[in-house]
Image 1 (tube, one colour):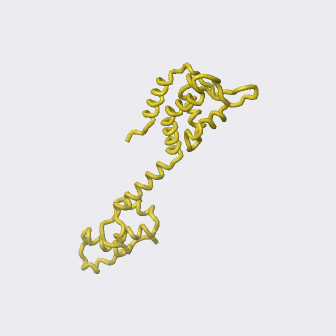
Image 2: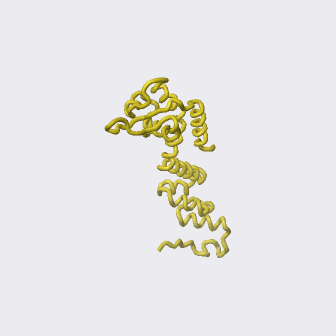
Image 3: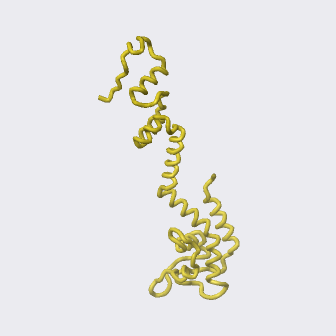
Length: 190
């Protein structure tokens, strides 16, 4: 029925048990090694563990401190693996790549010539600016959002092909400094 039956008082000579004796008797009935009962939070941690690991902890093979560290590590891993954390890391990585992307895009267009290129051609010329989620296109789109005075993404030609348009009059040094500041501000505080 779920209730723990302790041995009768006459087994212990009819005296009142000390806390240590009570814990030892309870441990014997529960089938665990003698010792103090775990705190409420440790008890909750133990209940969340697989049966074999829980038994090893109760037998003293694995300490509660080790189990707490494992639990903390697992929680930290879950937190860092969440979709929001992953998106946040991608966003920070993209912001960190913007100053380099600014100079790469300006080199692709050069000092003279066309001020518009089809987006696919620009991405092909950029090559491996970024290999990751979204690739170079994500960096170019982020650059267009962060520096609209230099780069715009809009339709090109009669069929409306997505294209990158630049303005060579933009101050690249000032833009680069602003993008570096944005990247620094996006870095998490340690």
